[in-house]
Length: 402
Image (tube, rainbow, N blue to C red; front, side, top):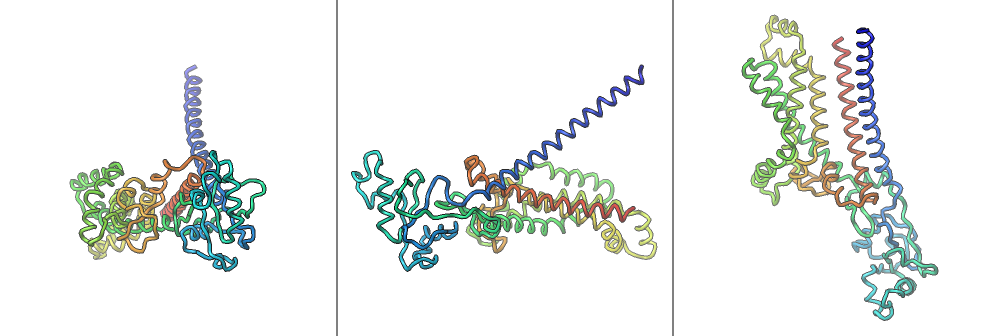
């Protein structure tokens, strides 16, 4: 009787564990599917603002424009249709608010009832015109030609140099500045954190006595538990003014400030994993090295570090992963300028900071909203690659040890 009751309890607990793990796995899969569903939806849109029309004179030879060309037209960087393959004619910009420059209130109508007809006549009368207006004023018999826009492509997104998703009339969704900003700050962070973290791990593993180690190890691990907003506040109050004064910059919110803060945040990961890897070095190998006349430093350099190099590499890669995914601290100290960085002393903007700063302003289901989800997909893929590399290195280490 007791045996059957024990078996039932074990089966019940196993069932609970199975349900728990299944729900967790299913939740993760559904989140990833939702992320990619929303993100990939970006490529089913054109860059033109939804609910609006771009129209030209019916005799204009230009029928298709890219989002970048349209931006250059409205920024008046392109001023002649000849630059776009059309006839030699100056470009005349028309937005809906310009209608009063061409027609009186009486002609437009008290309730704008004649507005579609006015826009149509204007398009017909000016050969070089390009009009931007809501599509509800595009009526049957409109005397003009609607400009077609291709759907957003992967090349436009990755190679685009401007991130301006709320631009009118066409959004600019180039993520190159955000991607480079993320990698630039993360690279700076790991270059700062890796030597310091490795030195600390060597000290804790091979040099520090038991008493010193019992004090330092908990302090280092405590760094991992500090909220990122506290790191950001520390960076904003201490690191940013220091950089501004040291390099005589107009502002101290730069990629370097982000790298220093991220480097500090990555230290616990690098130190802990590297020290654990060094502690796995067989004692016999160290004693054999010392018995052959090698000094303690030679043993560390020639035996301990080469033996634990896989763990040190994994620590560095996990540190990079920690830096790439960080949001709040980076948002507070990097200046958030979506421009392609040329040095660490310039403001930058990272992918996580962009998502955090803009998602609250993006209308659900709109182009901006989907573009932010696409950024999330890119961040997910980068993190996945880093985790796969760590997994590969760890499996190699297990194979070598066996």
